[in-house]
Image (cartoon, rainbow, N blue to C red):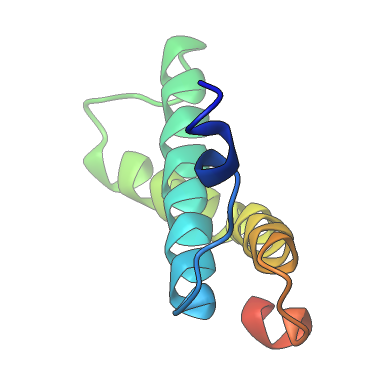
Length: 89
């Protein structure tokens, strides 16, 4: 661990924008999936009504866009990039 700990928390040297956007998009998809599963477990979604389920998934995906923006900005600032506002657009 003493030899590796410096490399574990080191930000990437190149393509910080691409890295942060991909992590943010993954967080958005994961959040939408998690919220959809919570709604399904609470029986708020009826699996027989496929249109309702698809609408709920799309709605939750759009709402979790704020999570993606936050995660993208935090990762981008962690990488010591200066234009973090550009990364959220």
